[in-house]
Length: 273
Image 1 (cartoon, one colour):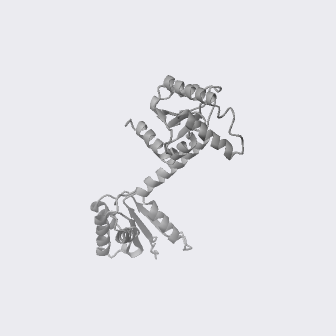
Image 2 (image 1 turned 90 degrees about the vertical axis):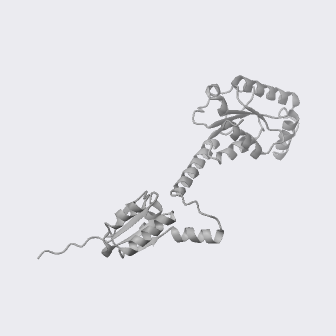
Image 3 (image 1 turned 90 degrees about the horizontal axis):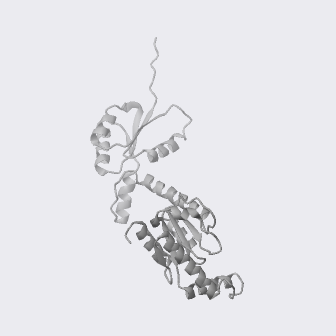
């Protein structure tokens, strides 16, 4: 007598994106069972009712059910109707959540598949930009600037670091370089496209006041070569000559907020200024 070989129980995962969300949830549920006999079958990037019907028509209703993450209401409804028609249990992960969030918030959902993956990519891009920006903060000497999206130049205390970090939070890799007439500028700066470099300038008296406040917070005398007007004028003139040599855009940051300077830089990068 030949024994009947029973097919494995199968969970069909259907998604209009990668199916990663549904897979993670199903794996979490399956892990509660001491069995490696449960089969998972993924159908990703489903785009039409034809796709859904083709899948459901092949499913054995006896030992199978469907788990799905589909954002478009018409596809969700069709899948539910087709599975009911064939007496196949189906479990909608996203639909009820989307509907209830819309109900309590009054905000219409975007109904775009794969948005979470785009958000993840943006997050990792931002983290990468921040790591790069920290590494290239207040640089001097020879540098490899080829991976930078933007290079900010300026004398000491011209808000380069907070400005760089603000832009890094937007996913922009920023290197900022201190300009000092006693330290040679990296030769690589002259090889970059002009729009990749931004020069910062400031009114001398304003810079002196900022530097004095900085020295006081450090418990130091506010009268030093760092705040000497002759020295400050020399630094600013040196910086402005560098900007002319490079041919880069220059922003006067005097009494401007970081957000306003960043907005101006973003416009320059987009070619709007």
